[in-house]
Length: 310
Length: 269
Image (cartoon, rainbow over all chains, first blue to last red; front, side, top):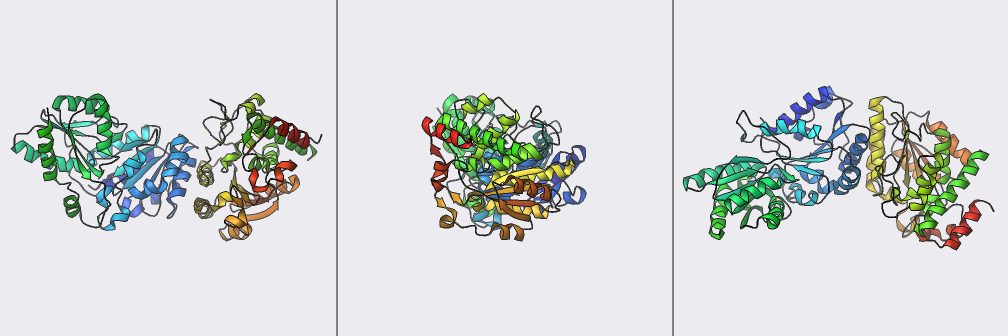
């Protein structure tokens, strides 16, 4: 199932139960899958037009009245475009606004460089009290949305919106917004991954297993606040780290992991992600190759970092 | 109205004491909205200072957040907090920061300061009130310089589209901003034409005429559109030496002697 379908279905379900939830779009409700909600909830699901700054502050005003607004756009327009509104109207004012951005990083594909947020996590990670969450699959997102509503405070949801392979297929999977998920235990190397790079890591894992390398695979769905215990425990166990993210390696997951490790467990680290470059048009396979974000790039990074391991 | 005139003197004196005690502050744009604040709080707003978070209350969002000292001067008069607080403006751990902060000051309905945002927040509050059907009136004040922010006009279109007739907004049109007179920086020319074109019920009045302010608000409550009342004001109104500084009075240092001089003037001594 597409993640935007999960989003819409969960919002629909929660809006029926909780009359405080509102959904505000800025002319991207069709790509983001939220359009149908306004038919069922005409007062609580509405469009502001192409005016993201107004959308963010309107949401803050509604939050001050006890509502729980979800605001929705593509990641660049849900982050850098409204950065000051997120800081002042939402975070500093302690408003309970959920900020949805879709098409993170290279997922913008044919919308190209103007629409590719290689920097959104970097921009937003230095804003206090803002939670940054990136779903991995439809199963996880379905569990995450109620927790995001239950949590009082601003949350940024950086969501791939189409269909992606399920990772958390174990029926016993229990999501915790503030706890990383260890997908596989291993002793040779830690791979900390997020978003669409979790699936890429799982592909890399097949190659690593074939070569006898046991990776400790930890999915960091919430990069802020990062699950420090999980990062440190894994790094102490393996002594070598690879990060894999769909974002500039400056400011995102690599930076967040490195900040923890340098204080608590300095070990060699190699990063997969966009290496301080802008985006461009292309389909995902091309873009993953262009920015060296394929499974084989992860495998190569693992091998490199293993040579540095003490 | 005589009582209101007396109250304006008291609130102006509070503003001067607040800023004069600290020795520096946003005096010009604070003094220019005192008359409006007095008419709002004394005649129109449905509020309870003993219960600042009262459900269904009218709200005031001062989007030109640097007018905090004027808001605090008024709230202290209403008894939201002790007048001694006014002497703590911008002191360490104060509840009265330069710019309005809803999480610090009882009676402040929105955190503002980054210009343009509070006005959008007010539209969100008005939309929320419509959904709750609680009959609240949402008042909001923007600056004329602030009207150069694009977000103001995003919010203006939103309010008209959403039929937010529960909004009564004011522009403090003192025609000055930090870097100069507005016509020399980025002219707004006829705000009445602009707001009317954006679908708002708009009037322009003398922003220091208490009767005119009162009447404009009374009329706005009967409107079926969002309301913009353009207030022609004088930046630094009420204190001659401050008025004469022109656009230089946005934020000024103030000596104790100047404070005493200004207090005597606003009290008519």
